[in-house]
Image 1 (cartoon, rainbow, N blue to C red):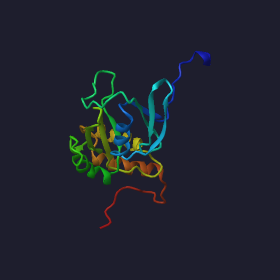
Image 2: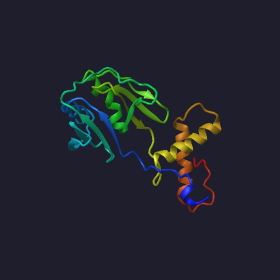
Image 3: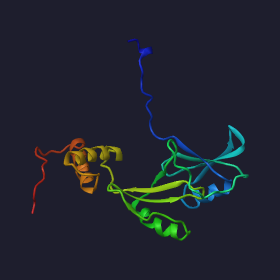
Image 4: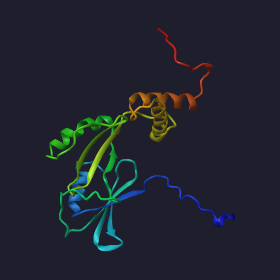
Amino acid sequence: MPKSDQIRKIQTQGVHHITINGADRQTSIDFWEGVLGMPFIFDQPNLDNPNEGHLYFDPGDGRLITIFTNEERTPDANPVPEAIGSLHHLALNVSQATFWQVADRLDARGVKHSGPVDRGFMDSIYFRDPLGLRLELASYRFDPPEGCRHADVMIEAHKIRVAEGDHHIDREHLADAIALLVERRHNSLSGDRSPRNAY
């Protein structure tokens, strides 16, 4: 088959940005920067709609969260519909140090939330933004080995979980996955790297 007739993947390399329909400008700044600490880094008109502004925030990894704003729109805290094809929630990464402060900091603002939720491989807490969008603040319970990504640990932990017939990924699967990745990717002078009892 000639190359021009082949079906090929369009390979993605990460999330570039996420854009949300917002209300007025100040509500967006107060929430995304004033509550979640995202620096407000860029501001211009919405190039597709002259009646809207387009605000850009850095969520902490150099990617972008952008908000379309309009001064004629007012905040509506009713939950955003979660129909088929719509966004269920947006998850943002936080450190373990920050995660365990989230409930108190939301409580101080009078924001309803789920409280900490045990996800096995991470901790989560859910709440809604001032416009009714469900957000999750998620914190991994592990650091990947040098040269690996969280996704590398997750796929190995999944394989271990399935092989052991367990319901979901938990801490033991993560620890075993990390050990496996270190053994695979990092050299050692030892011919036998099996576990031992040195006591």
